[in-house]
Image (cartoon, rainbow, N blue to C red; front, side, top):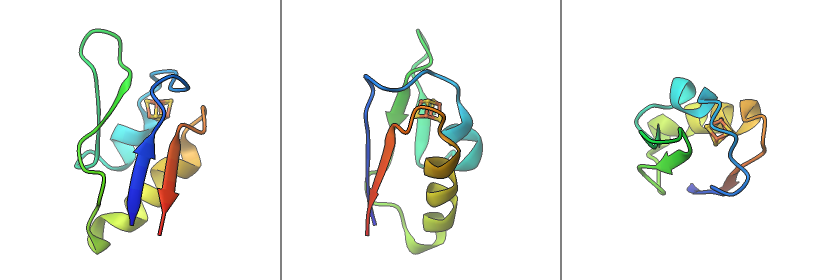
Length: 64
Ligand code: SF4
């Protein structure tokens, strides 16, 4: 799995961090998403898919 995020689309809602905190973080200054791990492990994959599904800005893209 490979993950990309679009910081221009992100609305800083933070759901991705709640869903997969080992893969996503938010910038301290404005809450915009930061991708910690662009190649999540198999164990993290389900949480990352959940994060992408709940992102209100559709800012998370997944490639298998
Ligand atoms: S869930 Fe989407 S909009 Fe919210 S912080 Fe994460 S990437 Fe940004």
